[in-house]
Image (cartoon, rainbow, N blue to C red; front, side, top):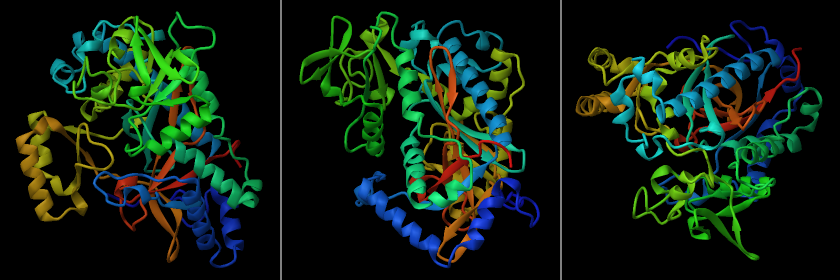
Length: 474
């Protein structure tokens, strides 16, 4: 795996420029200050009510994501490269999705195997030939990025369906500003507070052509038992829009109407946090009680914008991910700014043979897995786990990809034993509207709270940090 890059110290003992002020501040802190502030932050999070439900956990309603009070800092120059790469990638993803559901030029060019698309369980034939307002499929993207060196950033995966975590990005910043105003005063940190305003503007900009000049936006949630329900209610409140469940909506004359205290009101844009399968029982799963009967007919008629569009899961697929460099080149005629992690596609015989021979050295993931579930981290696995995964691979190789075990960068993190390096990743949020792409300066930094652990997912015990993008290099 190699030695992890230390984002504060770099390769040697000298503090990197972006971290010098933080290092001085940490040196001036009285003992136990960070631990005191950590407990204060936890109390604030409990008071606000931020919880993260883990399915199958009897104490799900009480679970807090651990919050680390030492910020992660990224320089303006580093961010400029990341931002350009994120814009490029999301633009290519939108062009790819439109092509897959219309002309399919990339398949005719032979760059991606047909069966990877058409036999994919998240490909939605219902979207074939269907126009979506303003040709935008992925309005909100969460692109997971990891760092392995001073200038080496890799995209780990693309989240193009219903990416979550932005509420933690916003709440982390608010808590940090309350707890450490003196530290903020010593830095010029780019604000993330505009995200709700930018999101609402993005959603409003992609309303159907026939909408009024002030389109009505609502957020569709599966309900209180969903693991991300806190975020759904948080965002609806921040955006000043209605939080609705399927039972609050009705389709009449090809339009989606919302029950309000003043009667029925047309909805133009639905920011949906309900998966494709459950959106419309007349089109997808007939047993779904979460969706809206007839929603897809209103969608086909062009009377509602769904954000994100139906069928975007094909861009989440980890086997499709392995083709992203080709996708960028095909649609944009440019070299990818952000690199992919080298990936073995277990659906291919040669790749499968290599993976089976090197399971103890690789990370193996389900192509539709998320949350850190259903994966094998070879170097940290027992022989029994490796043997079990080998059987799964042989039984259904097309369901898996494998990647080398990257030495994720580390950031200083407050632990019971004092400051210590812990591995991190970053999920920036990219908004695509009718005529512009917006990247919020920051994102959700997730941190593996356990020593030497590479698993940053909150569902697997990972925590979060505030992410500071400096306004200018120092």
